Image (cartoon, rainbow, N blue to C red; front, side, top):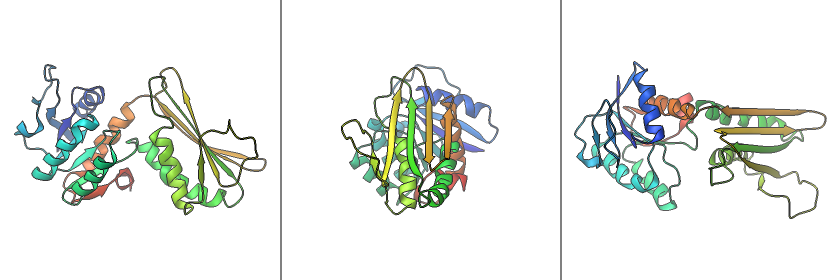
Length: 251
């Protein structure tokens, strides 16, 4: 049984993961951390992470960037692995993540979905075959109307995965409205759509001569990210210091 501290336990993702863990015999949330402590949970909740006196195997973090520095300090001091899911980290915080990972196991990924991370692997094989054969590559991502960043971090991760495979051959293009010219071979177009309550759609389009191949991922609920975080926590518990990502989890 993997014992978990849920960092940001009373947020939407924290509560979703709490519910998912309650249905999983292989994992249990035994402590929570949140600035809001009035909500009833089946485990003790602490406002300050350093006040937590419960023994845990791993931390799942779905809080916010402001809380990450103290979280990393705690995990290093207590030698507790951490699945870090908070977004919007500053360059300084990202550097601190790297430094912390030299002392304790840290797993950080642009997207916690198992499906997206499998797609990252598949795209490497696809682009290595299709791009040299003359296929153009485009990414279209769609999210709800409350999402403020564009393109999504996941879209960039998909692009980076392919660009890495092709030794940096691509040039990312986010807007063609100001330039009237034919598409260049090196372009990798990334388009963002915002509307309604779309959880997250990503299409990677390989457009060749007389044929099109599209890799698609649809998230119908944020539960996919919670399930991925749970799998990551089970994987990370007991691991030595290092910086891990979801590719390690799916093998």
